[in-house]
Image (cartoon, rainbow, N blue to C red):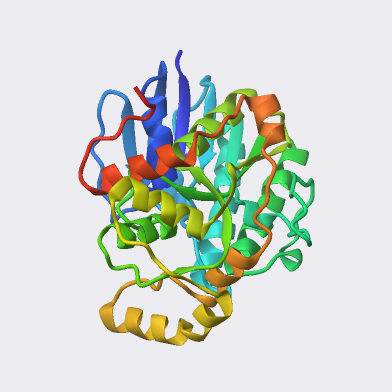
Length: 334
């Protein structure tokens, strides 16, 4: 019988890319989407509607697993650049993960791969390279998103100690094609290409292609060691590096990069404009904090144990821009 993959957050940027890769494998795929979302099932993927915050709504997608080799990749969650944890963020990122753990145990799945974040790992000072850790605490990280991901990661690893086979992956800042601007960094790329980006900022972070993270998640399901964590990163890039590369690709205008302190002074204005235009602010205080924080991560462990190898960022930016322009973009370069 074919291996069965259950993918949560199946309409999201990362999860939908994981499904693109799994379509090429000899396996069955179940994708969980929200009741408000739509996706058409076919011979490869069957979509189920449910909400990870509602345990009873997960019954159908976890049914009929007896005798099957089932792997769950839990990619559903809310990505937030806010400072404070909201009830919804806590309910989805932590409570939803608890529900997935519960259903995985009840249904006897073979492995649960949890998509955490590098933000769940405590930051090191002086730009010391950050590697995987074995314990997590929401008190040791900064920001709402980091807090909920650290708490959820802790619960996943505790489940591993109690008998559930779990593996955790920590992506860095995900960018890439197959998203039209819901991703915050893709929003920046879209604003640059369309001429709506007022300015960049002096700062940076580790950014990685969504396709490389998707392959890393699948590799973690197949090769990862139980109870282990794997950073899925690329390397540190300044915002200026990314903008310069985008300019070479698209022929756009050169953008000034503001000091973070100056950009911070404009945050209230950015938020006011976003509220009036019913859009999402690109720069918030936490987003600017992230771009000033230590964004140096090592993916050596994932490379050694999972065969993980991120692609060149110029290819990622080119493919993202082509996708935003309505072009078809392959999973891998021809």
